[in-house]
Each structure stands twice: as C-alpha cells, then as structure tokens.
Length: 73
Image (cartoon, rainbow, N blue to C red; front, top):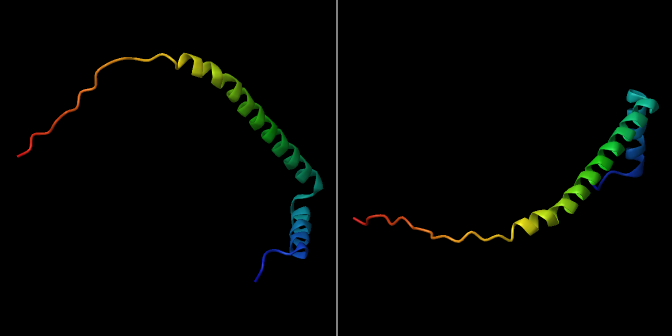
C-alpha cells in the first residue's frame, strides 16, 4: 500500500521509451530545459525591474474619501 517502488518506475520508463523512443524523449527534455531557462530569465528580469516601480510608487495622492451612508428606515 506504499508509494511507487523503484521497479515500478523502471517499468514505466521502459514503456515510455518504447512508445516515444529515445530521440523524441531527448527533444522533449531539451525543450523543457529551454522553457525552464526562459522562465528563470523572465523572473530575474522582473525582479530587476521591480525596484524601479517602487521608486515611482513613493508618490502619495492626497484626497478625501466620502462614505455613502444609507438611510435607515
């Protein structure tokens, strides 16, 4: 009733290799690696751009807030 054993994982790996082939799995792996690399790059660029946003967010808009009061019947 436990988790997946190493033998079950090996059987799944063999079935996947038979279905897709080693070349196709290599291509999928490289595509996945490129996607992760692109994601990390985008996150890093966003973190570098964030301080600029904070500098412009220091401006305070002063104003008055009005609360609409409902008539109690």
